[in-house]
Image (cartoon, rainbow, N blue to C red):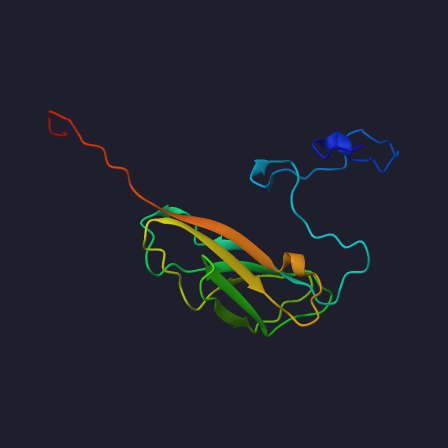
Length: 171
């Protein structure tokens, strides 16, 4: 059995040995459910690559910081995993399951291309706290729905001030 916890779970395709580390695997970094892992997410097709498959790869902005404002730009990365060029498709984001903000990407996204999109309406993150973002898209004929949505948590952090008991002025 394979417990999916380390490199010994892979099969070396060069000599078909089970339970031996595969020296051909070089991917590092990434996380799985927030835990450190040497695995990285990827989209793999067991059958033919579909003609239409567009994905929100990640939410790039905003990011957690101090003193976020009521007008923070929201930026996503989109990738075309399909074989045909795509254009004219809606992309949306919502904060804390609120009303979605929707734009349309009119640029042509060829096979394998990525695009960075900043939404026309910024997010209000002025109140201190954690905001849960959801960014998603849809394209007619895209049957690979599991990669159409990305999530991110963004925190507007509070500065922690400490009383000073200094007896001398700074010099």
